[in-house]
Image (cartoon, rainbow, N blue to C red; front, side):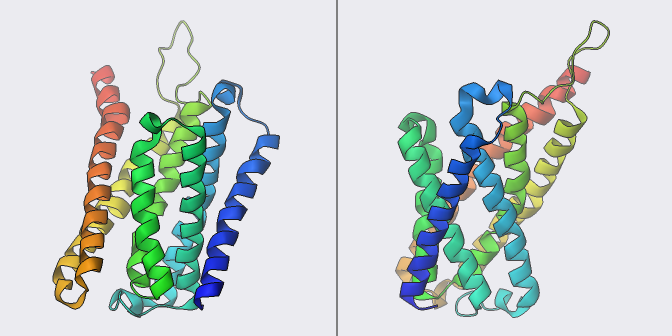
Amino acid sequence: MDLRSTLLVIGGSACSFKLLNTVLRFLPTPEPAHLKAWKWRNISTSVAHSSLTGAWAVLCLYLQPQMVEDLISSHSLLSHSLVAVSTGYFIHDFLDMALNQSFKQSWELLLHHSVVISCFGLAVTSRRYVGFAVVSLLVEINSVFLHVRQLLLLSGRRNRLRTEMTPACPSVTYSVTSWLNVGTFLVFRVCTLGWMTRWLAVHREHIPRYVLMMGTAGLSVVSTMNTVLFYRLLRADILINTHQNN
């Protein structure tokens, strides 16, 4: 795609996700989530993005496996479109959070989105490093379970119905989602980001300094945030449940 077409796809994507978010206003919201209706819509929109781009990234790498060997210049219309669509989503989500949440609540994700928009924007406008961006979108496979977990919490479906005979304990749906979340986190976040960091270090001599600095800074920020996130998930879903069982 030329630059004009790329910008149209990005803008169209941002508008499409905004439209989806608006449509969700008219759909039923679980009663426990009524007080956090904006967050319910925001995360539901994120589930749609993660499901779409995670599967799309796998399809791109399946159809063009040689892209893994050349993450700098090798790409297809399908992969270029994927990164453009994802860029549009992150622009939408950045604006959605900036307008509806306090900075104190959203600064971490705003920082994350700023990094992603900068890196993806460079890739789609220059048509270089598209493969690198596609590999990074494998992370979205884990994001599906991460967001579904949040929706279960918002809808009050974390625990089974408590009775006098049975203490509160995680529901089957929440437990399965939680373990899938942790498993895919290790595979599609930790392993993917580790592989990307190694690739960047090995190919540093073939990458312009400003691109190397942008990639290094971006991976550093995202890796730090993921480390904190993984600790929070382990503490909330694994360590506490283990302690209660003992």
